[in-house]
Amino acid sequence: MNIWGQKMTTEHDLYPWPYSYPKEPVALGAEIVGTGRTFGDFLAWAYSEVLDSQKRGILAEYLVMTALGLNLPYLSGDFYDLRHPDGFGIQVKASSAAQRWENKKVHRISFGTRATSRSELVDEELGLVTLTAEKRRWGAAWVFAVHLPSADDNPDTVRRELLDAGTWHFWVGSPDDLTTKSVPLLTVIANLGTGVTHEGLKAAVDRVVHGPSPVPDTEWKAKPKLVHWLEEERMHLVPEGALEAVHRTLSELTDLYGPSLQTAFVPGEVRFWLVRSRKIRISLEAREDLKSGKARLFRWTTTQRGQSPDRDAGEPVAWDDLSAAAVAALRQSPAVRAGVHDRQGPDGSQ
Figure 1 (cartoon, rainbow, N blue to C red):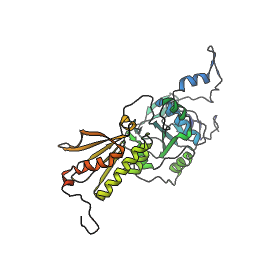
Figure 2 (cartoon, one colour):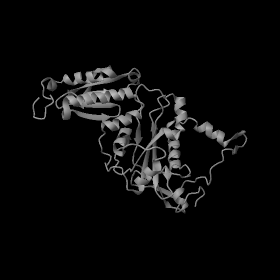
Figure 3 (spheres, rainbow, N blue to C red):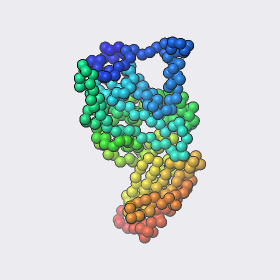
Figure 4 (cartoon, one colour):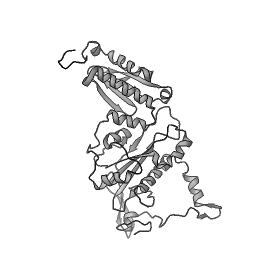
């Protein structure tokens, strides 16, 4: 048993060379000699801005550690965020739609997933270190942590809520088959399903590492569906009124055109079209639009280089009018006007 009370095979498993870690936590009341202040004062001064991305990430690692029932040191500079006593590494990726700065658009959550090299000790006596030639996504389990503020995204409110484990949501998966340098939250939800709470995190990690895992083997290639998109948008504090308007719009279009209707979901946008028709884009990106109860509708025109958004056609549309505006925009396509996409009945009649 090591000095922090966790069973490990060797101390090297917890304290990877060449880094040196404290043998025990520093007491909060430890005096900083000559200042009249304590170590706890220093921590309050240095870490109170939990909205900062780096400090929020450290907090997320701490929340994951506590959910697993562990008591481990913070491994700064290691290629794992947490080293589990059972002998596997865990990576923690954290983000939130609430940021320290004001933005005209909704801040979209994305996680870095770049493969990296790691240091290896090649001569313990001489202290020589080299980087592995192989780049990998290290760790048996990756935890994607998202803080979901209340409807009030005031920074002071968010700072308080960050310290409530109940306001965090977690997705756990394996880094196997990841090939991109980053993944948006929408991709995480589409491939890993509904997230878990702090209380359910330990069981989720155990399932991924030890199995049998209920996580579908999607190879991180599953395409988002409406249900995934709605969950992702809620994590970005998009108002329910906007989401209900989009849902209502797609339902009406499906009633009109059935399987001829094609859809695609990306962060902040829904795209829909028919064969040989213009693509229409509903955007929930502009914060001012959302505050005033509006979405933004764009028509897509065909150019020699493919599909491109017609910026002149973009206009804010009230949520209550979104269905009618979307249907009208789609009907402007020559193919639709010609009746090519009129929905057919069971006997083939129109």
